[in-house]
Image 1 (cartoon, rainbow, N blue to C red):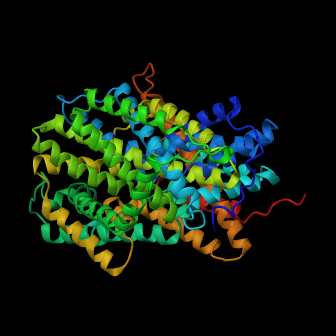
Image 2 (cartoon, rainbow, N blue to C red):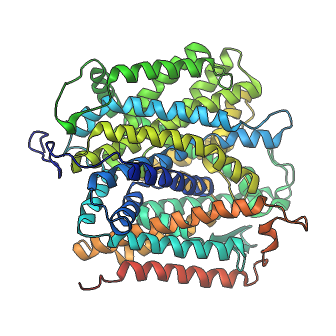
Image 3 (cartoon, rainbow, N blue to C red):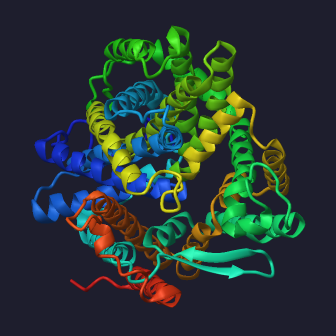
Length: 628
């Protein structure tokens, strides 16, 4: 579709409320809400989900039903601000927990302060915003009808459907409430274990599932293909590699383990050996994704560069961006902060390299989400590629040891957040383009979301680390652990490269077959207990939403909305339980320890409650609207 023939829902000559106290206040609340929920989800399973659609639905429910206001552009600005929290959290949790893990492992290293996290996150988020402004014309306007931007288009459809009423918001709120109750019973009261586990002694391995709402929801949202790829990776790790190590290793002791294989058990073998195999597979998958998209990267990069020197003046409201002169001044100020900020000792050259890499990967991210959606955005691959180069450069210039590794992680954090923010913002701008929003107002909304989310993420991370600790069973922080291993390996040369290269071989074999590498690689890297409920959620969607007609589309849409609510509900209670875990009582125990029932119902109780949860997904996706 040509740009000239496209007409937005709200024409350029109409002016509706966009930036209002209501949209700003509600957007800020949702930015913190979804930032916290996605931080918890990403640290638990290594995946995050787009917050644009659930934020839009919640906004419609509050603005239309409760406040009785009627402006689709005001709703759009709420989801624009709200989704910024999710995207910033997604970039931050891929890398920053590595600094906490180093601090927990050594008394010499200190944790990054709240303000260090806030400044790094804010600088990165603002750079992502700055880089996306010249990309808007090239990707959103000129290629309308060419790049589908799945989430952005879907979010616009949800908001347009909201013109008929706020029925969809009830589905999201229902999921949020049910997940909140379920999570509190499972991980608060501990009536049943949220992780059910069985040992398979003959194979020297085990099997189980984390019976939690967010995981089944991730599977439903991702669909059968992606979830089955993840589960296949789990099968490779837990039913191929672990049994082989257990069989051939027996009583032998192989580094990096400090005990014989026979004493490790399935979980010990996974944490000592399989994680390195998975790290090699994930790193290779990320690099393959970048190589395959390289021609697209170059084309988009050229267009974006021409955008910096060419600005089309337009009186049309729907084509007004923030002024590039002001953004360039802001970019120079950010470079100065990165250059002079002691927590990122990379010098002026390093700051310039960060900006160049950041803009380069912002073009990658924006283009990729335009083609395949935010769920397939290779942010981790970009982060790994950046860390490999940054760590090698820092090491060659004398920045070694903990200081050099800290600098590398900070550089990787900035790149990850830039890529994540650029991808999210491109989806939001696509939604706005379809609806007829003012780009400048959306960009201001993103700016507000950046500031709020940057201030919130530090507190969220400190809270979660205090409650459970990054790298623990409750919060494995898979992506950050992988980044940590990459930096340590390049800087110290102490990685078990044989295991890493085995992962590389697995990834190459998967690519040769023609299957997407990253989902399988993440399945290898994560415990099978996480990929099992994700796979079940994917099967649920395939079984109930496989019809290609309007009925099938309606069922899928309801399931995604309900699943988004489940994710938000579990994430919120996860944060609440983290607060309970650090509140001391007079008996010396925390509040969470005091209410703990010790898994009274056992594995059977976990299975029963999980089946009931799955039944709720079926009920809410199949339920019919009441006749008016």
